[in-house]
Amino acid sequence: MMDFFFLTNESHPLFVLGLVLLCGYLGGRIANQLKFPRVSGYIVAGLLLSSSVTGIIPLDMVEHKLFIITDIALSVIAYAIGGSLSISKLKRLGKSIVWINFTQAFGAFILTFIFILILGPFIVRSSMPHIDFLTGYLPLALIIGAISVATAPAAILAIVHEYRAKGPLTTTLLGIVALDDATAIIIFAFAGAAVSALTGMHTASLLKMVAAPTGEILGSLLLGVIFGIILACMVSWVKKRESLLVVILGNIFLCAGISEELGISPLLANMMVGFFIVNRAKHSHDLFDILENVEEPIFALFFTLAGAHFDLKVLKLAGLMAVVIVFGRFFGKLIGTQLGASISHAPAVVKKYLGISLLPKAGVTIGLAFMARPLFSDALLYDIMINAVLGSVIINELAAPPFVRYALLKAGEGQKEVK
Image 1 (cartoon, helix red, strand yellow):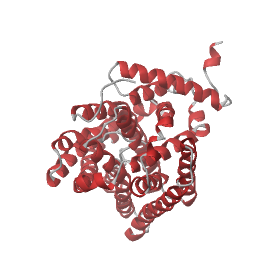
Image 2 (cartoon, one colour; image 1 turned 45 degrees about the vertical axis):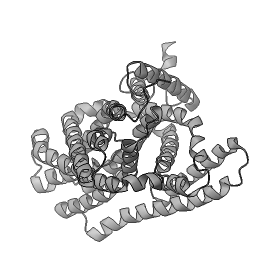
Image 3 (cartoon, one colour; image 1 turned 90 degrees about the vertical axis):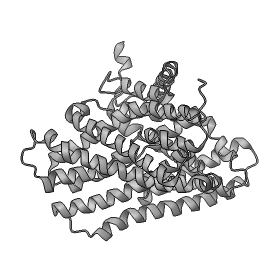
Image 4 (cartoon, one colour; image 1 turned 90 degrees about the horizontal axis):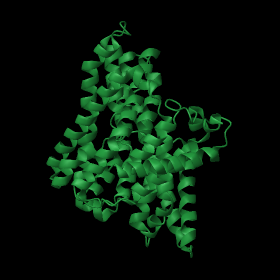
C-alpha cells in the first residue's frame, strides 16, 4: 500500500500536480505560521517530495513530464514584472535603478571572481592536481563570477505580491530584476570570450561573442513590443472581464513559444509585453489585476516543483565551493547596491535593504552554467563548476526568501497579514 505514495515515471501527471499543489499549500501555511513567506514553504515542500529526500516524486518526472509548468510560470511572472515598471514610477527612480543595476551586477561578478580565484585552488587541488592557473582556475573564476550576476525574479515577485509591497524599495527592486538578466547575459558573453582566449579552444572573435547575446536581447525586446501591440488591440474587443484572462494568457504563451522557436529569451520578451501594456494600453491595471485569480496556484506549482528539482547529492560533490559562491555573491550584491545607491542619491530604504533583496537566483543562473560546457576542456573541472553552481542555487533558494520578506517589512512597504 505504501508503494502507492511513491510515484513512478509512468504515474499520471495530473496525479503529481494535485499532490504538488496540496503539499505546496500545506507548506505555505506552515511557513506563514513560522513567520516565513509562503515561497519558503513551497520550496521546502518540494524538497521533501524530491527524489533526494523521500523519493516520492522521481526527478525524471519533474524534468521531462512537468517542465511545461516551469515555462508557463516564468512567462506569467515575466509579464507581471514588466507590468510593475510604469514610466511614471521609473522617472522618480530611473537614475537609481540604472546605477544600482550596474554596480550590483559588477559587485557580484568581481567579488565572486576574487573569492573563487583565491579559495578555488585550495578546494579543487586535492582532486585535480594537474589544473594550472591560466587555463584552469582563472577560467573557472571568470565563468562562476559571470553566472553569479543573475537574480531570479520569480521568488521576488511572489513575495512582493504576498505582502502587497509598494514603495521606492519595491519599485527599485523590480526594476533591477527586470534589467539584471540582460546584464548577466552580456557579462557572461565577455567572460566567455576571455575564457576562449585563455584556453585557446575557440577562435571566435570578441565581436562575435558579444553580437550573439546582444542580438538575443534586442530580438526579445522587439518581439515583446509586437505582442504588446497585439494584446493592446485585442483587449479593446473584449467585452467580458472573464474573457480578458483568456486573451492575456494566450498572448503570453504565444509570445513565449515563438521566443523559444526563435532562440531568444521568452523571459525578456514577456517582460517587454508587460512593460508596453502598463505604459501604453488603456485601463492597463485591469490587464494585471485579472492575473491575481491564477497567480497563487502558479506560484505554488512553480516553487514546489523547483524544490523537487533539488538534488542534495550536489552539495556533497561541491558543497564547499557552493558556500564560497554564496558568500562572494552576497557581499558583491550588498556592497554594489550600497555604492550605486550612494552615487545616485537613492532613498535611504533602498540603500539599506536592497542588497539583501537581490539574493534569489535560479533559472538564468542554471541556464548560463549549462551554456558554459564548451568553454571547459577538462570535463571534471566543468562537473565541479556545475555542481558548485547548482549547490549555490539550492542554498540561495532556501535562504533568500526570508531575507526579501525581512527587507520589505523593515522598509515599511509590506503588509504583515497572513492569508
